[in-house]
Image (cartoon, rainbow, N blue to C red; front, side, top):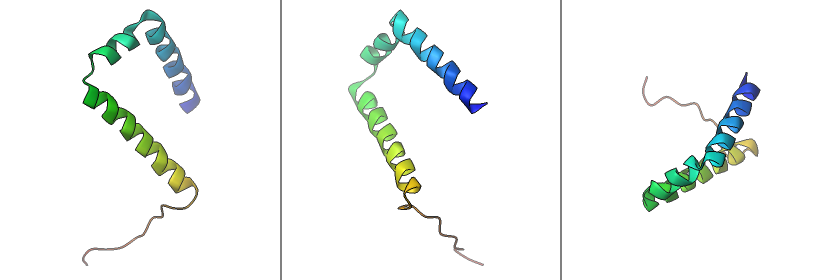
Length: 65
């Protein structure tokens, strides 16, 4: 099911790129939103990579009983 979703998103992204909608959206976004989105995606990918190599671990604890 996930592979199908990735395939459909690839087709959708291709259509958006070919029609020029993608460049229109990027031109009309405020610069702060565009930079913030890129930084957020980069940090999310960093978290996934850090979790994959074991730098991020789950610690179970209780704040109160």
